[in-house]
Length: 492
Image: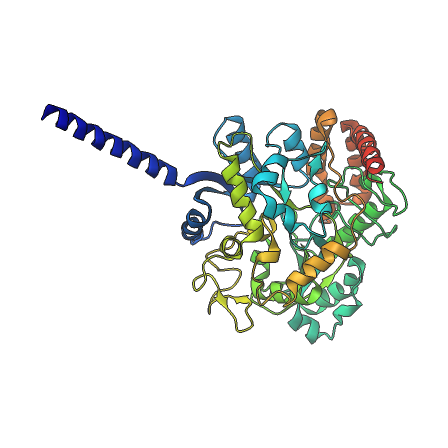
């Protein structure tokens, strides 16, 4: 009897152990992702993550552990988590900051992980492999760029009711200077309307063609050393150039005339917030849509009919965002499996980009997406702008505000579009880290006021340039030139 009881207890224990092992094997692997938000966290963000995790458990036995972070604090939070050794499996980083993070040893090298778990990602770049190759640093990949329409340009968005009222033809607008007579008309005839409010985005943050005195502008990732001659690889100091002085002088003239929102350099309100007050005629912003669909998108987001016109030529100019796996990850394989789905799986991509069908969006008769009645881009409970941070737009479902041929358009522009010559160049600021920090402090001190027109460039640009030179901008440009020359030689 004792022998039987002993055998019985042994069998029970073994079964228990087997059951525990089976349960452990079936337990989803946690992937911690730092999810970048633009604007406030929507009420449905957590709900969408719950739905996404149901899908991920079924497809790859993975669950996301999401920390939502506003874009303004994202890099600070990421640095703190990684430096303290906290588990973090996926982050999205801006292309301009990517080389610095890589050189600081913050991310895994991804080539082996991609070969084993990310074949779908590699296949997604068919025909525009240059995007992936452009993310290599010293021959290795540490991040994978999202796939979207990587053209960008500055547009002006204008109220259609006022264009119609004064018979203004928006097709006459080719550069920012063409706006002056239009702003004059609005200012003189609409005393309660300010011609322009935020966001006239900082001129030198635009790494694409600029129609100035020279007709060419390539910001080379950070505008500290730029290309202003289409035939030359010689970097110049943008802030000491005639183009820069001319731009700032024009904006200063407009500010003095009352064409520009008087608190434009200090307000924290966005264009969307200020424009909805009805007290403004236009704002400037960057967008990768053509003019027709930029107009539809702006109209939907601002609650009034808007017409958009390009102020700069659209070109493929950036990697934009890259998904990276931090060195504090304890699940890099699972992280790569998840990333692969964001380039290949429409169900996963639509959840991440758009939320839950029937709640956050509806499917229109033509198959594109639309908001439910009473909902728009400004009051939706789910809006994360993840479509330009992670994964591939080629597997998402377009919205009614997008062109019906959006995916074909993206493929065409990535394969055949005009590119800035420096696309794919990554500037390593490590050798001049002290000068880089000092110069950026000077830029912070002067650029916003100069580029929003609130201070006189004739008085302040000489002072600005002198302080930049004292902080080391010439040393930075020399180091950047050395790295750019090596990059050009290696990519001939």
